[in-house]
Amino acid sequence: MKVEIEKSIAIIVLIFAALNIYAQDTLVIRSKYLKQPDTVLVYKPRHSTSDRKFPVVYLLHGYSEHYMQWSSIINLQQLADQYGFAIVTPEGFATFYLNSPVDPSSQYEDFFYEELVPKIHQLIPVDDKNIFISGLSMGGFGALYHFIRHTDYYNTAAATSGALHIDPDKFLEYSFAFWKNDRLRRDAEKVFGDPKIYDWSSYKIIKLIKEYPDFNRAFLIDCGIEDPLYPLTEDLKKYCEVMNIPVTFMQAPGRHDGNYWHSSIEYHFVYFKQHLRKE
Image 1 (cartoon, rainbow, N blue to C red):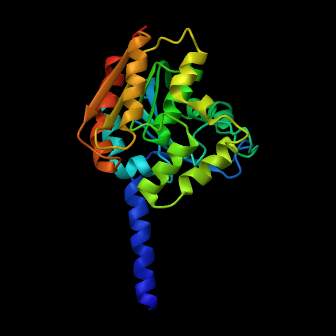
Image 2 (cartoon, rainbow, N blue to C red):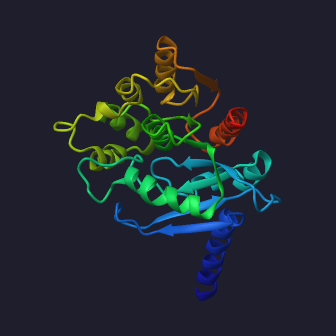
Image 3 (cartoon, helix red, strand yellow):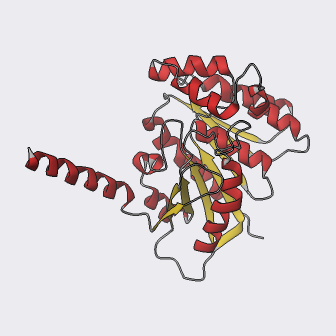
């Protein structure tokens, strides 16, 4: 029994090491805005000169996952080397990457810009003209939410399989579709509040864009056509077309899973590379 336990521990250690082997830095940030420390993986391109400034991509994970989700889907060090970007994957918990109106210990947007961003700029020589953000599912929502609200900080953004329509009934539907229970609906209420009191629809990406009438920035959205969230991406695409917002829309066969995101995220890096600013 002791040998079996020791083998199990060794396997867990090896798996954790394999997921993080190429991350040059792991940050643990104790935040005054969050109830628990936030862990962040940072990947920098290898074989670069010491005086070079890096474009940066923040990659946000999905609901029920964690800061290592992206590194379990694709080789982030390889992406950093291939495209020349530094990649940052923070822990987002189940915060939807925003400041909760009901939980003072879940103020993620404040954490992001008051604590995480300064840490990254201290750690990495950042090319301030070329900062990007992307994510999957909950992280796709978070990426566009941050991009729309903080356009001065970002060059552009992208979302894959984004949970772009914040709605209690839809969240209950998705929760049973993915987990056969109401966990997503219950966790979302901890963030957004009781829907009988708080208006969840105010967080919808389309409604958020309407609150910023001067918003006309290019970004990318994509989703697998077998994904239950596909109609949300298509609705955002149609709205942007009507409003003459320069959105790039991509679709492909795929579900709401790692196989689809393994392929889709490379297109985000190609898109970001095409949008690099020289001046």
